[in-house]
Image (cartoon, rainbow, N blue to C red):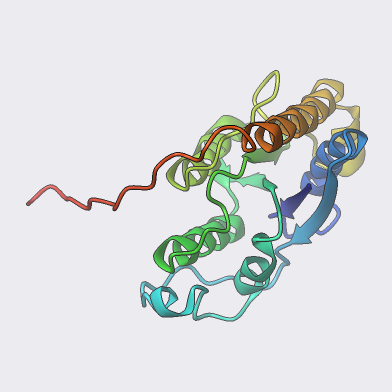
Length: 209
């Protein structure tokens, strides 16, 4: 089993990376393999609503989004990390997740269906719970079980060495890794004896019809 940890910070090895490494370490202790994916610090466009992903099962824009989509199906779980920018998730990770999940959903892909996911948030001081709520909404729509820890998944610090001094935050990251490993192992055993849920044709409605 493998989990992909996604670093949504413009800094490759900054505070968000430090938090994700703690999650990764706990997963590894439980025999779960991990890889890190950095979305980079080049500009990432938001979704342009062209709907080409219906035919391509990927995004029409060629950048880190498609690099991620190409490998996502090989993983059993995901941890998405973001710094707090203006009391929310970073603009880059927001554009990234908008397009990643829309391309998979619209293209009929099954890269994320029933795979566990978690959000990790890093901040100097505040905005963490708002960003965490924002991230979890993606997983809820994609039918991804949300993994939690003994507190909301956040660390505090303005630099990696400060994050490592946040002893409670680092413990929260480690507990998150242990909890995800436990879920993955339970899912592996359970899937052998319990059939998957039925998939019904989706019904679309809006407020005028």
